Image (cartoon, rainbow over all chains, first blue to last red; front, side, top):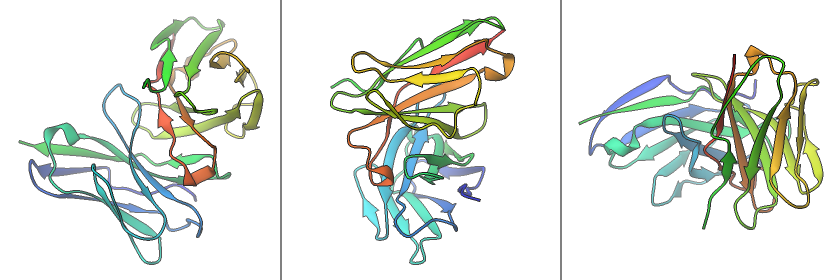
Length: 110
Length: 116
């Protein structure tokens, strides 16, 4: 099955780090892992992507396991604006399709 | 620098009518992807197009659904004879070069279709 697996929901306190896990055990060696987030009634917003090594940008960090079967999105200091559904995606049948699971609903407590 | 634009944002149709959803990619992008999202679910790939070409339509239902991306103008997702099960949010994404998973897809705000 090409779908990614994520926890349904997670809670975190404001200003604390958040680690969002994702399993993608059937991913191939050349497939990038992309993370998006979606606010209610909005389109998905790109967060970060990577292949093998860990990646950082202004929004988040992405830690990819050595065997590439899992990855973790890290928000270093969560704010209320980070409350969203976070999706870990990977290519599917063809390299152009992104396969989406049900995502993780991140709840930030003030 | 405008992002991906979709219109209409909301569309209401009665069963049997046609729905036309439009997508204008980001400036400089010539690759367009359409996805469908049901409530509480992730997105499902429908079709990938370049200008004047359908590259991958493996996620499109075989009947009633069609997509195009003409040389001039927006990409259009067309649903003929809509049924209640077509009610969903339809998202369009675009990318610059179409290099598969190497490249980021940027999404529009979506069109929410409601079939009565």
